[in-house]
Structure formats: structure tokens, C-alpha cells
Length: 352
Ligand code: KG4
Ligand code: ZN
Image 1 (spheres, rainbow, N blue to C red):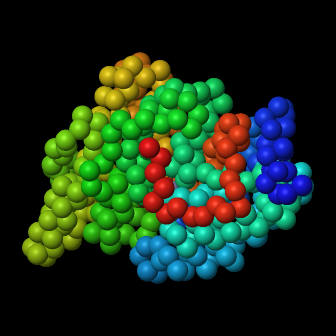
Image 2: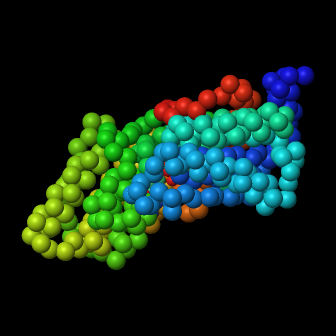
Image 3: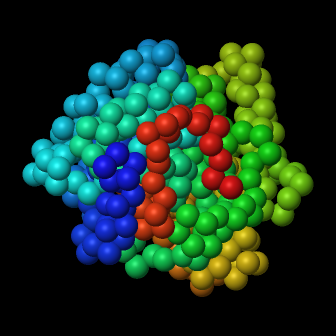
């Protein structure tokens, strides 16, 4: 039997199996992560190797350094995930890997590693969209959450409002017309000379600051559920330059708090509006920025006021990890969607 025939037969059988355990690998950006998740909902093991220290010196992710670090780390994180689960590769039912969006070299490392393992172990392989992974982190943290719901996806490259119609079925409601929220946080952090990664630093500093110190413009956008962060970013940069020209020290905490407040207010306002107007049964959040403390607090307050149940991933599942990839993979496997060994990286892969 060829690999393809065997994978097809196994996939058919797995759709009837009670306990399906998937080993996933995530290497789309600067985290090398491997995880085993049962039935898309329960973490058996979850290993994340962060490359932050390797990139901090350069103030951001250096793609070539990321690829090399993934090559060195991917075997190790896979071994650790198996060891932590007390399993061997043969105990796993299927393998999964992120194939986009992300840095091409980084993605290729993971895709090649998992194609090799899938062929060697003769297991089905599932290709997962990284953003679908972020959405699926909600299925792990909230065992009762089922589609349909509206989801705010906010990461380094995305600020989207989507409707999750069913597992793996998405409709776009709105998106940013310029920067992503995470990108805006990272750029503002650079203005305040905070080290990479900027988002969490701004968030921590903002807890001590006055959010009304700096008035920032409210964006004008074409769509009812669209975002724009470039105007805020420019106003923020101009204010910092003015203070510097006057020789005044930057009130970093107040500036961080003002910027965070402007970005988060906008995120919350549109997400709640979209959920209300589309009569969503629930609202969820996903992506690195959903770890933002003010976003979590403000969204909870507004969702409570609107009477909409709110779901979010646990903090450790907001940023990049492989458990979310294994969760998304489970629902793809249940639909019979497996990848061929010709699978390639797709750096600009879209969710919708
Ligand atoms: O989802 P993620 O880990 O990677 C991508 O898929 O892009 O998101 C990373 C982004 C970065 O821009 C980072 O600064 C931002 O999420 N981020 C935060 C926080 N934690 C991570 N932004 C604001 N507040 C945070 N607490
Ligand atoms: Zn991510």
C-alpha cells in the first residue's frame, strides 16, 4: 500500500475513533512549538521554545535567524512533546503542521520536518492555517464553545472580525485597512524605545499610566466593522517627537496607556457592534493581542452589557503555540481533509 492509500484508509478509520490524538508542529514565526491534543479539546502535552532572546538584539524577528533556530529546535520540541505525553510517534493518530501564513523559511522548516515524520511513521498529515489555529485556541480553553460565533482575530499580522459559521468555515465581517493591531503596538513600543516584543511591554507599562494623557484620533474607515491604526500611530509618533524637541523626557507609562486605550477602544467598539448587529450567539477573541489586559477587561465589560457570552483563550494559548494547531487539525481531519506529501509553505495563506 502506498503512503497516500494508507493515509486515506487511516483517516477514514479515525473519523469513527473515540480518542484521536494529534501531534502538531508550529514554526510560522519566532516560536518553535509542538503539542499533542486529544479530540481537538484536551492538551496532552504542550512545548513552546521561544526565540525571543535570539531576535531581541535586532529589535524584531530576523527571518534567516528564525529559520535556522527552527531547524535546530523542531526535532527537540517534537521529542519533548512526545516524552511529556508519555507517548511514542506510533501512539499518535495523525500529524499536523502550520503551512501558512508566516515567514517562508520558518514555515518550510516545519512543513519539511512533519512531511518527513508523516512518511517515516506512516501517519496522516494535516495542513493547518495559523490563523485558524489562533481561533481554535478557544476550543481548548472553552470546552463548551461551538460554532457559530463572531471572533475578533488580533495578532501581529491580523485585525479581522470573522464569523465562524462552522468548524473551518469563516465569513469576513471586517478587517484593518492598514496596520494590524499587534503591528501598531510593536511600532508604538519602538517609539518609546521599549525592547522587542513591544506589545506585552506596552501593556505592562500602560497599567501604571494615564490613558487620557494623549488624545489620539478616532479613525475613519470605509466599512462598518473595519479598523485603521495608522492615524493613531502617526499622531503618537508626532507627539513623541514634539516632546523630544522640547527636551522633555517621554512620560512612557502615560503614553503607553494612551496608545493602548485608543487601540483597544476601537477593537472593542467594532467587535461588539459586529456581534450585536449580526445577532451572534457568542463572541470570541484570538491571536497574540487577545492577551492584552485592557482588551480582556474592556471586552468583558461591554459583552456583559450587551448580554453576549464572551470566550477567550487562556493567556498561554493567545500567543503562538502548537496546541491550537492540533485543535484546528482535529476538525480538518474529521472532515477528511488531509495533506499530500507535496505540501508546500504558503506564506500569504488567507483565512477568508
Ligand atoms: O499571534 P501572535 O503571537 O503572532 C502572530 O501570529 O502574529 O501575535 C504576536 C503579536 C505581536 O505583535 C505582539 O506584540 C502582540 O501580539 N502581543 C500583544 C500582547 N501580547 C502579544 N499586544 C498587546 N498586548 C499584549 N499583552
Ligand atoms: Zn500567531
